[in-house]
Image 1 (cartoon, rainbow, N blue to C red):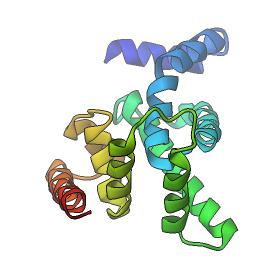
Image 2 (cartoon, rainbow, N blue to C red):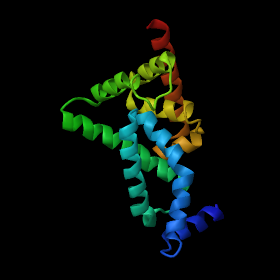
Image 3 (cartoon, one colour):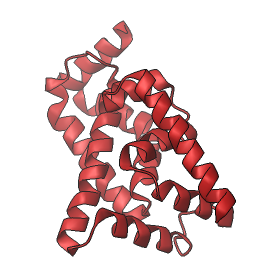
Image 4 (cartoon, rainbow, N blue to C red):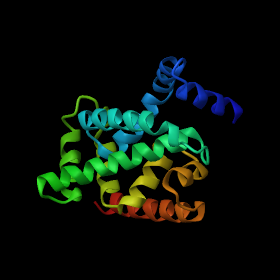
Length: 180
């Protein structure tokens, strides 16, 4: 924890800020990209959201209180940015966020950055049928292999509630995959 506190000091110090931020980028760019990509599904949209996420992290670092790990705080920002992006995109288009998600799923087959097969597309379709919170919990646990405690810090939800959400999500996905 002391190492993280020292790193945050380096990020806030104008003399060491550039080097520290480069280290932050090199450490977290790929995991945050994957996290955001799991939510928005589209590569180009993910790049936009990732850029906005790092801008927000940089702008708000001085407000980081250290009540959670830096990792959790950044994931919370990335999650909120991804959800806000989808909601804004839906609002601008005058359609529901579910339709936006359905279109993104349809485009996955043509996406050169998606290396999945038909089974993975089917899994994404099953996930898309879940409520937003269950989608987030399932993706963070299944794809990103985060611990419930980490997801709890990111989403601000109790571990028990997360376990229940994940359990319900798995049951719904199993049902979707066996009946479709």
